[in-house]
Image (tube, rainbow, N blue to C red; front, side, top):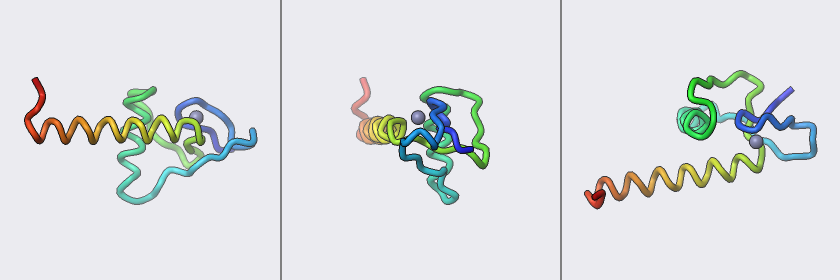
Length: 77
Ligand SMILES: [Zn+2]
C-alpha cells in the first residue's frame, strides 16, 4: 500500500497521491523529503507524496530556487 513519504497518509484515504518520478526529478523529490522531514530517508516502491505534502514540496522547490537565484546574483549578505 502506498504511503506518503512525509506525513504517512495512506493513498486509500480519499487523498490524491503522486508516485515518485523515475527520471531526473527523483533526486529532487528525495532531497525535499530529506530536507523537510527525514534526513536519512530513502524511497521504497510504495513511496508517494500526498496532495498536501506535494504543495509543501512545491513551496520548498520554490524557496530553494529563489535562494539559488540570490546566491548567483551574489545578493546574500
Ligand atoms: Zn503527505
